[in-house]
Length: 475
Image 1 (cartoon, rainbow, N blue to C red):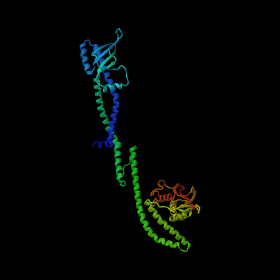
Image 2: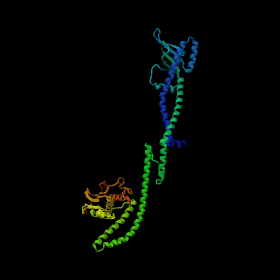
Image 3: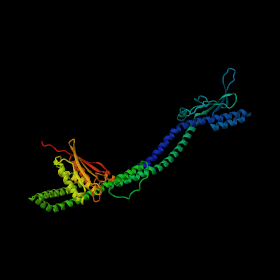
Image 4: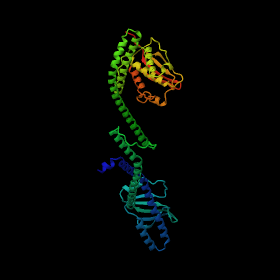
């Protein structure tokens, strides 16, 4: 239970790792510190032995010196102190025992404190700590009495090992206390800075996954500039983006239902209109017959437009039926229809169709008509407040493609419209627009093997470029 509740959480793992890492650092530091403690421990006994030697040499009563020596040996665990003198006739050194007796049949390890070292020998520390406690350590130190070359002190290894073990225990306890305290402080700091925000973010993500459409209380903008703050801001942006997509899907579903109803009712309404237009098309008068045929085409296009919008809302692509079609008359029909929709626009706009009357494209006539109707209607609406209202259409053939340029003299597209130009419900630039025109037009162009793109826009006007396949020669 403890392991699952504590170590199973990020905060528990953080605290445990902090304690382990601090303990490992203490172990690394302990090795040189233990060696330094050994050297200082031996140095202290050598200095105390030197002071005792001065006291014994200066006391005339040897019995008083013997009492002092016994107390010193008991307190410092020193077994023997001797002085190495020079001056014998044969030039040999003579050892003068100051106190204690020399060890017999014991292994002797020598440590020379007269050699100054920056770092103690780690090998000797490991030997005295992990080895057996038999034998003695002979310490060679600087003398404190004149005429003496070296001060020699014998210390049992067992006393040094006990001192090292006691030092190790104290260091271990202190290290454990320091590691726990450090771990708690780091845990509290990181818990507030990292663990708690990540936990909150995880809860928000779980709630969002459970019900992405549910609106919660908007969170305050995160001002953190680190990775946690960036992660929280990215999640908020992603969440808002997904909810926007859901909202658009709901609008599309609503639009699909509305268009289904409109399509159903429009078919009933246009039935009688179609009967009248058929009779007008069969009239012997050429002008009336021409108007009737055009009315038939307009009614058919109206029905297909409703069906296409319904298909778009259901994400169903309408299959084109391409054939060789003359391009110039198709554009003429589109410009006449879109100009007629605007009040008094017919006389204000100067439209010029520079396309060769014999130029043909291999495309679906109805789909292509809708492409140019949307583009030309947008151009006419954009030039309503312009002083110069000129609309030019021209075409050229490049690598089996017919490139049609539609240029107007409107004020240009705003920056917001350029960013979402071909996104549904976002590209409309006038009141009452749905924002579907350019989106549908690009899909219709691409479905026929072509494309639609914005060539340029600015204060002098806007230019759209439509690419469609060129005509196919009969086999």
